[in-house]
Length: 344
Ligand code: NAI
Ligand code: ISE
Image 1 (cartoon, rainbow, N blue to C red):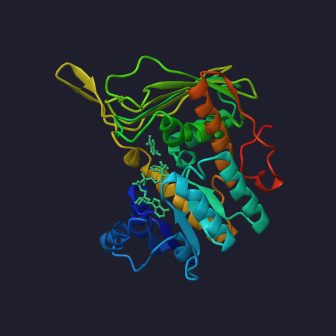
Image 2 (cartoon, rainbow, N blue to C red):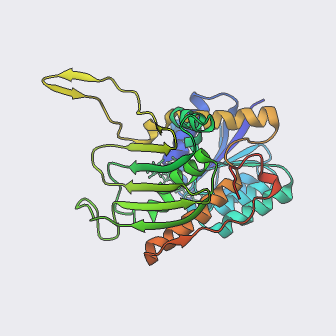
Image 3 (cartoon, helix red, strand yellow):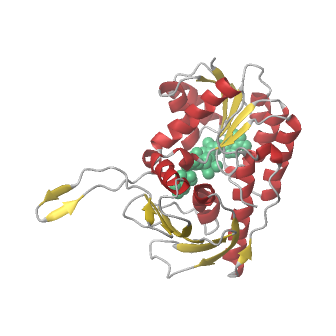
């Protein structure tokens, strides 16, 4: 079975996903594209030699009866509308993060999906497919280091452009940690506060950088998550879990270690596209395979998108107020209980 895909948003990650669907993965084929920048949509068709229709907007693309699954890779504020349209049309959806930019928006999607009666949506939290995170989770699930007590993690980008503002450290960047960490330890967040160390000279007026978020979970784990998006030296994702019996670290990306001229050195990656390439491939292959085998996606759910949005909203409030902010999730509907990591 080949899943016929329509892509909404042919920017950076839209093109990356088109490339992997067409050239790396099996089980999918891009048959339609759209972008508010129509030139970009036509260029994607040309660059990837697609046998695909270019539509003027998401309404027209979703209405195409030859499309089985919709990939939502437009910018965040446009996601909710496209996902709701796709659910209404009964199409499968792969939606890049964020599922929607507010918790209310995510809840509208959750409600629409439940009304449809079957899971249709997978959210692009690709770290759950990264080999390092998979190994770290297996060690924790296997009780290798006993009960987790503390987590220290970092999300560092070499630099960001001038449009990147303080709030985007949460909505664009920390959102990956927000999803990955509660999944790693099967726990939910209770509160968050944020501290702002001295600002790097490499930032600009509207971006406080770095930022340190401190979460408490319902199970009592303390999480210290640093976001530093002008760190200059590379793209670096770190995670250390301290347990009652030992410590488990996210593995470093494999890189040759060179001893030369009195120096010991190895490379650090510079680009998220490269760091998580295998994870993106696996998440999308899993999406296609699940549709074929199970008739519904098995990856991160709309409920995971909702958890991330509620938590992100609390982080934004913590940024603005300087206070510790409670994170209040609604109870998980039965519909999502097999897919979401839950401890209510
Ligand atoms: P981008 O700015 O390169 O591309 C977004 C594209 O969407 C642009 O071509 C824009 O014209 C188009 N667009 C905006 N509104 C639209 C609408 N209503 N209908 C159709 N097209 C529309 O951005 P990028 O980096 O590709 O990010 C896209 C999404 O993917 C964002 O939500 C971002 O957070 C997410 N993302 C996820 C990553 C991950 O690691 N999972 C990595 C990078 C981005
Ligand atoms: C980008 O939007 C992503 O989603 C990447 O995965 C992330 O690591 C990067 O920091 C974001 O800017």
